[in-house]
Image 1: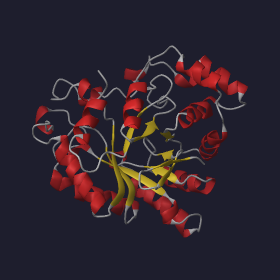
Image 2 (image 1 turned 90 degrees about the vertical axis):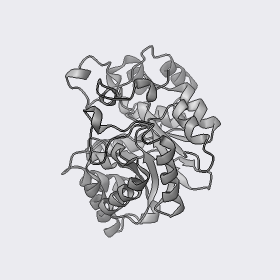
Image 3 (image 1 turned 90 degrees about the horizontal axis):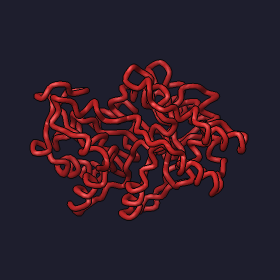
Image 4 (image 1 turned 180 degrees about the vertical axis):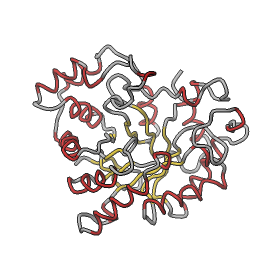
Length: 316
């Protein structure tokens, strides 16, 4: 398994198991199966509301002798309702309790958006904080303190554009070590990738398969990445699945990738994508796929009642 390396030499397995939208009752077994298959990188978040079962899956695997804690790389994320300086530590501690861990390997600020405490998804103006109320720098200062105290080995962000990353970099001190963003051939984010690499920030791709489980009314007309003929042709050439090619695409770019599955056979299948070597011609074909689309558009955070705009999230 290829690894990405942090500045201190710590290694992150480039392929991990995502747990977003993994339902309670399913994710415990999924985590166990993933570890059993050879995954050592697990991606979690408080807002996924399944960290307790993720922790049970980890505990089961450790108890059965499949892995030691030090062999795992576990990521979690600070939700939007805990951006105040005094709320960051309790939020991290809650994730640790649910996961049954004494430390995280990576803790991310989930979005550059702040809600009032106890708000899962803000709908009304009074449920939001603004950047004037809680600057991102306040939250980042608290994140740095968690690393200094050993509660997490590394810190980073998720869904941050270049402007927001610059704001944190300009603080001095600890820089974000990771930026986790939606990324796939329909959304390669080349300029953001270049910026992160120039500043020593690693990248993780979420929704690498194009969020096929987000097919509600609002997304019914979205392009279907898993049905794209360019990807299918490359998959046929490599005797692989379309999903494996999409995972291999991120790996070929040196970007960590976290496909989600609760199906044992699919979990194993996804891991085998790390063995696929795409050619330069394959990468060119995917670069010229001809479709641009963001599946996780952030509009849930930027409605009429919100003080935030889409430009607070994405590249202008």
